[in-house]
Image 1 (cartoon, rainbow, N blue to C red):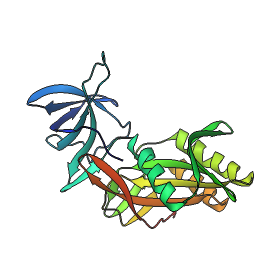
Image 2 (cartoon, helix red, strand yellow):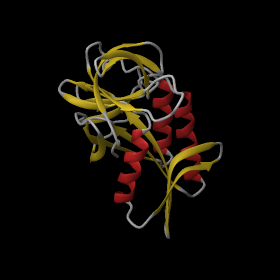
Image 3 (cartoon, rainbow, N blue to C red):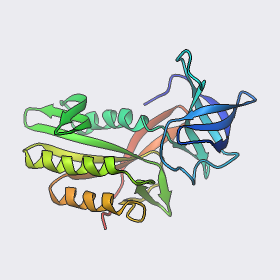
Image 4 (cartoon, one colour):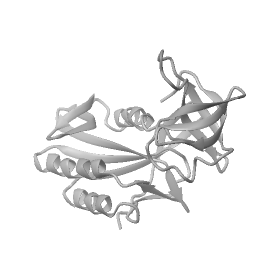
Length: 224
């Protein structure tokens, strides 16, 4: 997954879930934050930022904040980037499959659907930005929508489909992955239930640069 154009800047402050102040091109301005998570450990005043210019006429913000430098490495915070990187990864993991995006099952619309002669696989993708002491955690804020996705993946599995949830760590320093029970115990319980029902729980880290993010290596998953 690669961005067409990026520019450097400096993060100043977060105004709301979707907006922040940053210095871009020597000028302070309001930019769009492409992630509704808390990101408290990443969005630190003075952090080096990576932004994409917007081509949408009439938009209130001219730039999207897509990555920051943290502890000497780039961390992608664009919530749309994991789906693109995951699609590239799943095509590598399941060669010969036809891939569709946003396929509906039940009342959920899952991110990826792969199909070939013997395989019908629904996959939900979750971007992960929070890493503490080598452990990647999801979510960093409660997510009822995420819990619902897990339960419906389990239903898809019981209906004869293959099902997986893919946690894509948008950085390269994760040694293992665990659900963030402290922040969202209901999600952690749902993940354990889904795994027990046969939903595959996958996690990969990413190689992240200023203008790209590529799924790299599998990360061990610890559900408890």
